[in-house]
Image (cartoon, rainbow, N blue to C red):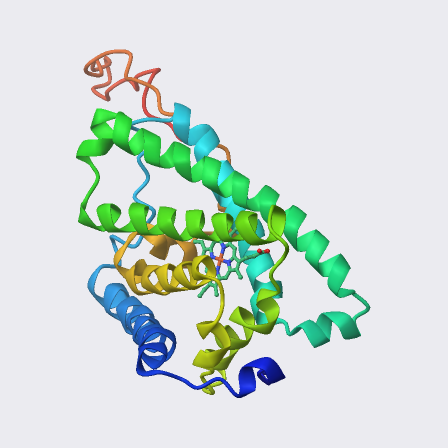
Length: 260
Ligand code: HEM
């Protein structure tokens, strides 16, 4: 399943390759796992998306669904493209040409949705004063790292597979990726890949290491119904204080805060 193609088999592995494609990925994965355990034990109440919907909702209304929808499609594409060997898709009757065409079209739509949504989320964070003030150190790490990973991914796709001659990352990047998880690292598989793919993979590793210390932890606890639930509706209080009634009980204000 993880056999390196014959054109890679003779390639020698340098110390830099071992550092970049074995040591760094494993360190990042270890930080990902241990970091999640630590965060769960230390900060269960902070284990949320830290929504800023109350502070700004116009950009969020479009940016958030676009980003999340794009992300779900991109994740699906990565699972098929990285985890499933080309021989399996071929055995299932999907030709290389059919796979490549679908990946480029679906990947481009997903990537553009994700970039547009993330652009809107970053813009509101930079342009809305109240959100900028609520941006903490973990956000200052997360947003640039997420943007770099997404932009490098879509640029690699555009440069090589949309406008370029085509690059079969399933015989290189994907082989390296699977090798990490079956504990048979194959740094030589990615060492010769185009720079954009290498930078994308490295920034993704760093993103995985940062993950447990950011709002991204909400991914593991988002209820499924969250996706379809209506947005919360907050209303201002109509009167500053509830007036007491004859029976002594305060009359509820018609404009009290409600969730819809
Ligand atoms: C080590 C982990 C990862 C590897 C090896 C990897 C590899 C790849 C490859 C090979 C492509 C090109 C796909 C094509 O040309 O059809 C790609 C595209 C892309 N990647 Fe990644 N990726 C990783 C993680 C991530 C993460 C964590 C994100 C987002 C947070 C991401 C976002 C994207 C985007 C937006 C694209 C362009 C759209 C698409 O083709 O789906 N990737 N990635």
